[in-house]
Image (cartoon, rainbow, N blue to C red):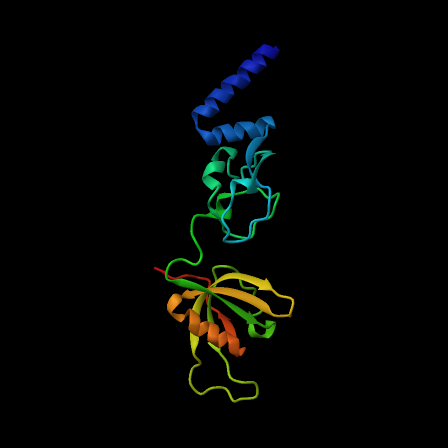
Length: 201
């Protein structure tokens, strides 16, 4: 009886393997087995290159809702960059790593330190399209003409100890110095533009 059951499981395994990796993954899940995936042995800040020494192997129960990077792809992961701040002990997924270098050629990153009053109440997230707008001195009348603004893309948002919020933004390299000079005056505000991209955007 045991032999018959084992033979049936083997037959099921062969059938699922014939369907490809997805079938094998489902088989492992149904049998309660674990799979080896890549995890982090050390913290890796956003944009930093991931070293082989930063990686370790973890055994996890398969979950169809998750897409961890298989342990066998560790060599391909080493040398790529963290797409976000990655913490030791976390399981790596394809979205967590990138081959892109930030900033890209032709772009610059500018830190915009602002108070919460200079930000929208809607939390900013990486990838948001914003405008950094020049504002008048406190007590001055509002400008009659439209204020000057520089378009940017949010890279990261980090509270700092002084009570300010540091919004790192990506801009064209040609406007990076101009934006940094405006930010130094403290007279800027950040406007969040629509997150709904139109055709071709």
